[in-house]
Length: 308
Image 1 (spheres, rainbow, N blue to C red):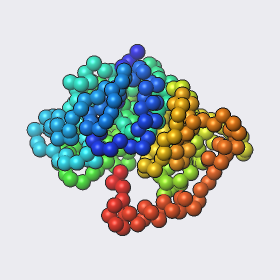
Image 2 (image 1 turned 45 degrees about the vertical axis):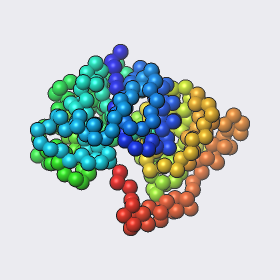
Image 3 (image 1 turned 135 degrees about the vertical axis):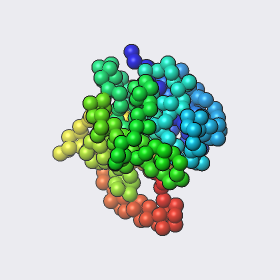
Image 4 (image 1 turned 90 degrees about the vertical axis):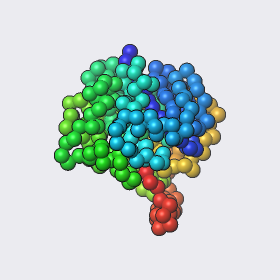
């Protein structure tokens, strides 16, 4: 079986979804999750923790380059994610694949999507900041350095103070370069759910798979997206779900073997009146959406809007 490690350089307060993330990670025992962090992350069989301060991690990145990089705050790490394959090679040399991701997510079954057939065929997977994988070889790990007209130049990206979203789609960074210039090497079967921001829709919509008013059921190692379609409950398996800009979510789960994710909280999966309760949790919430729209507008005017 091909080995996989997902890297998490993370400095600061852990997100509201962290415990849920951790439980779903533990249910993927064939995948390792490696932290470089000053946060309180407890090691486990497949959760590896390297305790360090941000400045120590910055030096690991700087060691790759002969020019001085601009990495003065953790937020800017987003633009340095494609560099991890080089900078952290001494930590990941034994793995066939390495990747990076976010912690405001819940995983389903990795191996149901990253099968041996898929891993044998591709070198670049998905390409969104919340989960991206690379084949661990020198040519793949240094592709971000290849200069192609019309795409971001890493030498500029890594030396300016502004965030450029170098790792994401639609910014002519590394993901776009892989997708558009090396399409045959890319696994682009986006069977995951990037959930709408509260200001777009407080009731959750999948921006990647177009289901609306959704919930998520996690059972064992499996994650399912749920919706009601003409009164009938439908479900579809998901690799992961990403809950961007939802720090208000409350974790009320007592049994992580079977739980439900609603727009504002994570709870035990209901045992009684299941359909009625699922319909209630997935209802449209227009007034709450309007509240977050106005809240976001006010924060931007105050200069406190989201950077990412």
